[in-house]
Length: 214
Image (cartoon, rainbow, N blue to C red; front, side):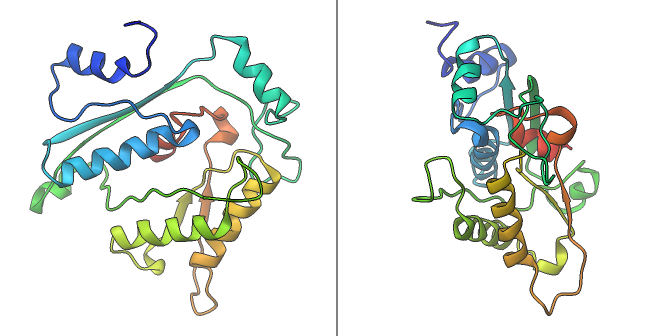
């Protein structure tokens, strides 16, 4: 039980490192690490802890998940993620361990930070075309909420690290949401879209943290 229960993982890490404060595991499938990061940011901002570690891990140890994803036709035939490509037909899986350490900064300390996490947001699609199909309007609301939380205007944003994993429908919906949010006619700017999955595949649960690190 102590070695197989995923809920024990975060507690074991805190135990080994002597960490205190809020400690929990998050399982929201592919968004797990980014949802955990949002919770960590809120706990640090509310001064429930001076800092936080957000980590994600994916190991491909059992064939059952492979069989299930193949039955659902989520895996690319060549095993490679090809986001935004006309030949996209699913994603390639990868094993990954990634973590981010954050702490509260203020004043001149901001100058010494490796990166500033200005704002986050989390929501759910609700009903869409299917259980795993994304929802364009919901993604627009998420982008707007994160933008508001960060106190940034659309012209302040010039790069977006996308979730796109090589799904013809999902990738198109994500780009459509970005265009609707940041592509107004009165804004003359270039918005660069990035995606690490074309280089290292889709790491599933840790993918959100991997995207931020990239």
